[in-house]
Length: 314
Image (tube, rainbow, N blue to C red; front, side):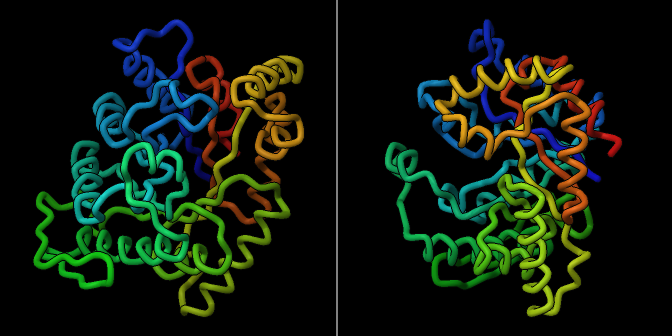
């Protein structure tokens, strides 16, 4: 079972801007040493966790820095918004990350959703249908550029012609593609058609089991072996050495993210190491091959180590 760490926030107490990446690198190295298999950052340009003035680093630049400070963990965004970049340029960026990291890049991609951020940055907005259509075309563009010497593609939104991507990805089969989202009609069908990895956002064991059944049905429909797809979920982890410490952290998170109790309980997995292991095991039993935990207190290297030691051997 795989274990990933997402760093969702860069608002590290007492850390000035010129020391920000140093702490990010420390987090990544601590996670790698504690048994995490992958490191992820968001592909957002303004912070989404409550205050848009809170610091956030551009995803692919910070991943390149993490690549230079780590040796083993896979690296990706969870997930790139399809309308944020031309997909051919995106393929080049992810391939560059793959080369810098000696074959550790993963392309995480999704349909994008943050209208406020898109308006602020002048990103052309589009309907859900158009974003999903663009997502399908973008995946085909990236896949072609990962696997072909000179890729060509002609779609409604994107066209490339003899696009060379040199140096090539390190792995002979190209860079794995993760599709993020749990939409049952379109997103999970795209996973069945194109993806190596599926990532759903949160959900309890019953929800995960249902989503995986839907994915299996799409695989059968398109003639894909469902075992070819690695299944993961992003879960917010609030872990303490005991339940009381976890509860204190939970109070801080609710205040920072402006969450009421009901919403917090829907999105957060809170508890002691034993609680965390039991909850994550339920998700594995529901059909997952791994989890990626979003840790609001990832700036605390002891918390990162505790999470890795607790969950990496499940």
